[in-house]
Every structure is written in C-alpha cells, then in structure tokens.
Image 1: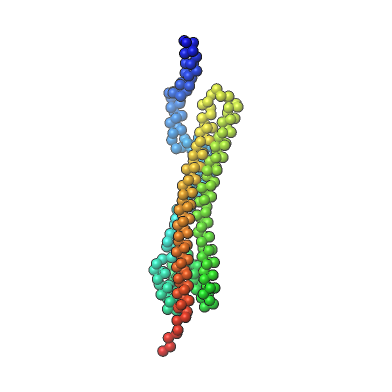
Image 2: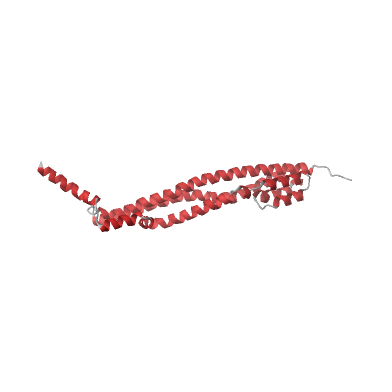
Length: 243
C-alpha cells in the first residue's frame, strides 16, 4: 500500500510543480503574455496580415456608412423643387434643381430627362441603366467587407496550421519531456484563430447591415426617379399658354 502511494505521488508531483511554478521567470512570462503587445508578438507572422485586415475593415465600415447616407442619394427639398419644375413643363429648370445637389439621383436622372421628349420608355430605360452603374460604384465598397470577413478567419486558420507545424517540429527536436517549449507554438496557433474570428465576425455583421442600408436607399431612389420621370412626361403634355 505504501509502495503504491509512493508511485502515485511520484507521478503527480511533477505535474503539480509544473502547474504551480511560482518562480520569478514564470511570473514574468505570464505577465508578459497577458498584455496586448505580448499576445500580438506571440501570434507570429499571421498578426501582420490580420492587422492589415482590421485596418481595412474599419476604413470600409466608416466609408460605406458615409456613402450610404440618405443625402448621398437624394433630399426631400431637391425632390420637391424638381417635381414642381417638371410638372410645369420646364425641363431645363427641373434639371437645374436636380443638379443643385450632386447626389446619386441627380447623376442618374439628369441625362434621362433630356430624353423625355423621345418617349417615356426610353427615358426610364436610360435612368435604370445609370442607376445600376451608380449602385455598382457604391456596392463595391460594401462587397469588400464581405471579402475581409471571409479572408480574415482563413488567415487565422493558416496561422494556426503554421503554429501546429512548429509545435510538431519542436516535439521532433526535443521530445515530449519539456512541454514548456511548446507554449509559444500553441499560443501562436490559438491567438491567430481568435484574432481572425474577432475581425471576421464584425466584418460580416457590418456587411449585412450596410448591404440592407444600400438596398433600401436604392429602392427609395428608384421610386423617386420614376415619379420625377412621370412628372416630366406629364409636364411635356401641358399645352402652351398663348396670350
């Protein structure tokens, strides 16, 4: 019985000592790895492209939010002044009111109003073509967010694979007798995965929010443009007043 207790103690004592290392060197390593810079350093090479992805993500979120603001598409004052001018039959004044605000509706609709004399359908088709071109110019920035959301976790996974390869190489060189040698490689594997997810998840959420915001703005702009084309068509049929 005493022999069995001695064997059990000899097996568990190294693990206890390893798990409760209170030496100054161990405390210094723990404190170093707990701060942000220590985690970044432990993450290895993958933290550089992940840091670039995070900067790109913040830029795209702020820029796309600014570009999908309502004033970038049309304003209520612009719409009211333009529709009054078009209903009176003054297309030149309507285009001037429309171009007073350099926004998406003005760039898409102003060329179409010039074609209103050639037919309602031709003007509407030109407006739709211009609107699609303008939408592509805005949506590409939102789409880049989806790219960041997909690439960042993959870079993190690549860093994980790199860390595990280094861990197996360390085992091959030193064996399993010194597990503390594996701490850096395992830390690299876990930190890069976590960092990739921390970047990818907000980027994906922002992508869906901004895409819905853009779709709503484009639907409202298309409806406003259609109403203005109808007003221009009705205004072109107003009889001239001869004194």
